[in-house]
Length: 68
Ligand SMILES: [Zn+2]
Image 1 (spheres, rainbow, N blue to C red):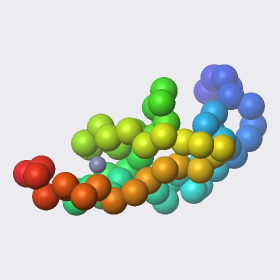
Image 2 (image 1 turned 180 degrees about the vertical axis):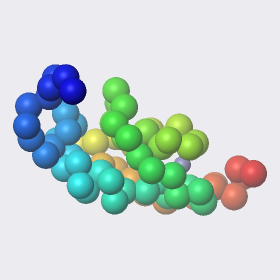
Image 3 (image 1 turned 60 degrees about the horizontal axis):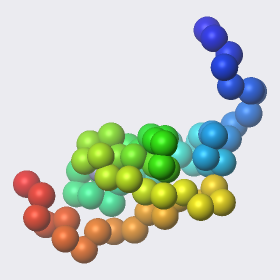
């Protein structure tokens, strides 16, 4: 019950939490994304998506077929 963060809906990256909850990794598994040091990180494939001005740069990867 620690309140380290202020009572705001935005994360430290400036992304709205409800929006973040809707985001999915473009990988085939559609993992959820979570905040990382360098932006958003996939909870499954650990791919990192940079966040610029609160806008996550999530784009489909062209060689996602290489993963099993
Ligand atoms: Zn992923």
